[in-house]
Amino acid sequence: MGSGTGERITKRDGRTVIEGTIQDITERKETEIQLRKLSNIIEQAPLSIVITDLQGTIEYVNPRFTEVTGYSREEAVGQNPRVLKSGKIPDEVYREMWETLLQGQIWNGELINKRKNGEIFLENSTISPILDTHGTITHYAALKDDITARKRSETIAAEKLAEEKKISEMKTRFISAASHQFRTPMATAMGSVEILANHLDRLKPGKRKALFDRINTSLNRMTTMLDDVLLLNRIDAKRVEVQPMSFNPRLLINDVIDGIRMGDSDHHRFEFSDQSKVETFISDTQILQHILDNLLTNAARYSPAGSVITVQLRADARKLQLIVTDQGIGIPPDDRDRIFEPFERGSNIGDIKGHGLGLNIVKRMTDRLGGTIAVECPKSGGSSFTLSIPQMAAF
Image (cartoon, rainbow, N blue to C red; front, side):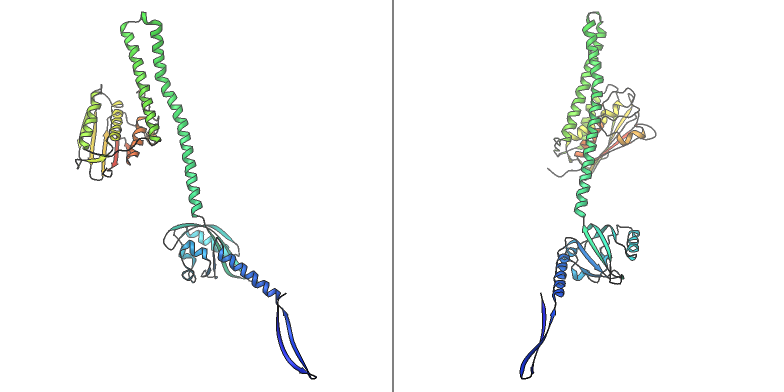
């Protein structure tokens, strides 16, 4: 038991008498211990703790507050918590908060605040009125938890889950479409083989040649499709390495056009307009050739025989831009948003051959070069694809 004493020495009947009082201070000592514990808890709490007066002026902050916000205790005391406002929370939220507090109720919510250095952070805040023994509000106390890292982790996890779901759906669609695309030429080839096997001796030379040509075309179609599927797999696995080199854009484009022209049985007229301002550019020529080859092949496939296909080149020290325009069937508006997806083809293609991987390859290879690809379809008809790629650092 704790005690406090007060002593007095006196003489009484010739004797020395010591008089005193004893006071039990156990309760006071226990109160002091409890207050010390409470103070330590507040000071060492993993949450920011802020106490304000009725006007919202800060009277106390704990060390966690200074750690989170960057404001020292001396800088915070005397300030209003609005010093932390980021401007990203609507004023209605603060009005609703004060209405709740003035009614003597506890308010809880998430706030987007700003540290002293200007960095944005998220807090889960619980603000409570402090009442005296008469039930009158004297102060407000806020417990604030910095949830920035947790929210970031949740966002990353959600994005990763959404991406995995998207990939899974795309793989399912890819397999379904691939099996369908392979089945058609395979059935054609097998049917032709069966006719030749059973009726070879009765077929005229012209019919035999037509069947062999059909087999050859079907096998070439399947081989091309398989090559494109394997290429997409290499791109997805990041096994297509970008190898920058210096080249003359004009010469590269002329070479690609000449190659396409040689294999073009429909005799399209390829016109090249050079508006470049540089003689050399740095990028991956092999990837760029593959992109342009796909765009020109598509333009020829979906355009009338003998029609004009134009290639415009614009290049400066920062970027290279290619515009491939044809006079073909165009792309319906409802199809344009997904035309770069695998196995997606315009709904107006009719019986024009193709497997719907070319533009997807173009898009992914453009991404590898850090560029963009976009399509427009003028009202007059046809399609116009615009490729933009940035100049790479010197190798």
